[in-house]
Image (tube, rainbow, N blue to C red; front, side, top):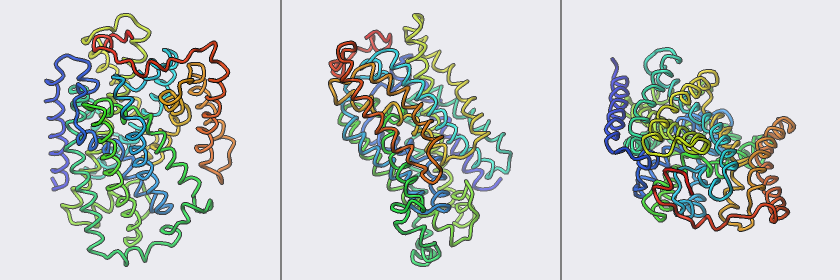
Length: 481
């Protein structure tokens, strides 16, 4: 057994043990399983937000996109995600935390109604299954390369491992394992970048990069992909605000202040590791690499000292496992909490909620693994995931918090029509203007939302006062508020 194989097995083993240990901290309470008892300090929130932001989707996708289409193509992912966390911290962290939510779709119920909650939940389920699939695809490709085994076998193996420890320890397991995983990830990326820069020289490495890949053409010339790059930044920056894994960490912090500070720390860490990753993608020109999805892993295995390469690979594995575990929990919780509980009178106590949430995680993981097997494209999957929720769910969240006249008819229309409009524009807009569909959709939905709200005030009374309503734990568990 090689050193890297031994390191990966040890790292995964430690992660699983931490996850199993977290089972004893659940203590039979759904609030512990769903959001770690809402006791997480700012530094934990910041670290885990970085893990959710920049995982296999982000890291492997960013390096590959940078090499194929230029720095701004690869850097658009971490830049967009970093901006998202700063926006979330400034505009959303405090008001959402104060509402004492169990999940993000709870907001759409409390501010609008049950049907809006259902529409938002379905939209978020679709997009986040794609997000899990992207992470599983990255992990499957990585494990198959390291252990010289089939992609399908390693995909099944890692999916099973993540499912076991995540559902055992719930959100406490997700947060506890993330701290270790992200520390290794940050160290691995920075060590790799600084070693490559020091060993081969910045000037020498960049001299071999085509000018179009490193100048500002990627931001200002459509033929160099500027429209698509700006669309990615906007999709990440705004679409990720309505990502259930991001908001779940916000509402799990111990105070509104901690939630806000955690978002700022997460944004800084995401840029700190994201920009060097995109630059490593450009360094691949020096090594005359072939363009491929696992470019970052290729460089780690073949162009770095063994220990530094191991740190980088373990970091990618850790951050990806953290994201997949967190989102699989979030999705099963949303189905249990915001779909089944809302339409069934039999799920009203801690025991039933916990049992059902763990059970539902199984088919979700099977579906995500199937998508990962047939569509193993981490970077593309990440962008697609948040285009969907940006199209319909962002405007009702933003105006629901900051506009007293936002009402239910406008919200549910925006969520449904946003998805339809996004698909329509995707089919109508030519490839030469790719990205315009992402940029136009939220603007159109914003205008539509405002017009509908103003025209329907008499038949759909706004529930703005619910922003300040804080339910007790008993009400929260039963969903009776």
